[in-house]
Image (cartoon, rainbow, N blue to C red):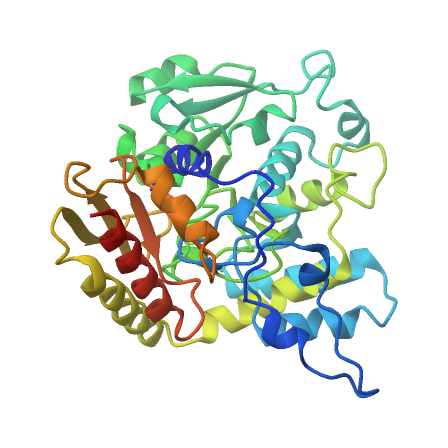
Length: 407
């Protein structure tokens, strides 16, 4: 699904639902060394938990962290250290992993885009850093960024936040005409690559021709794992990635990776430095180390084995509903963003007497609560890469039950 389609699907999410699910109840019953049961704050506050058969969406708290990540966070929370030193040391290791000259942990992919753009605009000039997002041209800062028309999806707001103006282009000729003394860079939205007229290689060639830096947003475009270094190897000046999706780092983290001078400038635009656009984009030491642990685990895991598990899980869910009269299912793999086995489900409302909204609400209010995501065809999509072991059977059973009830 494209991100703008995801936004439409998320409009189906509930407001103020307080049904308590079962995801954390087992942990809440564990005893502490003192003999007292551990507090489960989600249960205590009446927060609904659910089986995530939708995917890594921010509003659904994206992904669950592995034990190694939680341990890294817990261990580092007990000691003091200098924040910039953690950022530098973690960044050095991550840069090696992703074939970049430099890297840093950011407050999500959106923050990575803003900070990377700021780094291009200001360099290490502290006076310019104080000016953005205001007075760009008056401060001698280049203020225009080229973006293909098909690559507008709302997340370009991260670039707008630095005060720049986006210039829409469609063809190579448009790029040649658009470049002028105000042009700061060229930006590429990877998940919309197939919808644009200029692909990565040509985009980079055009940027090189005009001596311009290039940025690329790959927020939700891992897996495959190779995308972690693909665009650095291609020569993009900076790459922005979400850390809390398939990599399963802290949800509030992202990665900015790319050329050494841009990352150095981005750090100066970032917290803990004051009078900067990034002062409010604070990333704590626990998140930095958690992101590092998550990335290390992700790169070194068996991705072929994981894919086979996903295929097995999606098949179990598909088999449970594909033969119900009036229901049509298709297993797809989105080509770029959210690149995992996905079950696309639609139905004939004459045979299945329920709307998409009603069906999804039935899943949401059931026990256990389940979330799927609406698709552009009036049905829903279900993924399995955020499921815990055995949850695919629960999802399969519940999907089938609700369809049979509605026949």
